[in-house]
Image (cartoon, rainbow, N blue to C red; front, side):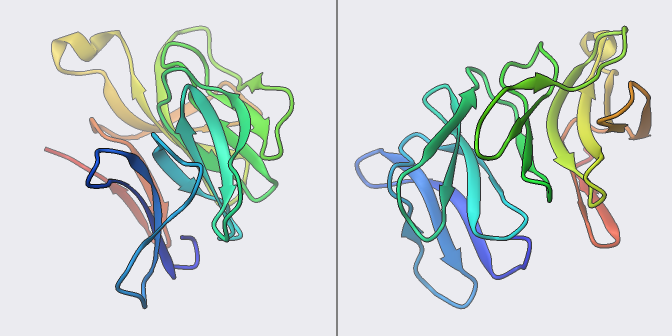
Length: 182
């Protein structure tokens, strides 16, 4: 969680049913969140009170205090989501389409600006300013073993900047850019 007090994860129980679980760092036992069957790729709201996740071809949100999940948008082949301070969620619902923007309460889904040259933009992660985001970029060179990078882009521009080469997503934590290499 953004405050560092809890961990959210997907786990499968003894009968093979997967769901979202929450564990406080000061507790030994995790608790399952109801109405999260088949959940994947969870991400936190900035206030630590809710989670976004994907299940049954949809982007959903749920309060960690309990209750039912809320359907926000279609996401048939999800590849990551991130929740901004202004209660906007960026998510990839289908890998070969642009990253989408939607209000955390639901509403119109709007594609994020993209340059004319196509690249896959996967696993977005909003930066603290709420206007820039990290993403994993994959372009046509990927078939030759190149073409993977961590880039930063703006919601207000088609300009991007490559930060490093990597075949994984990245996350900014205070003072560090976390990503996997080799």
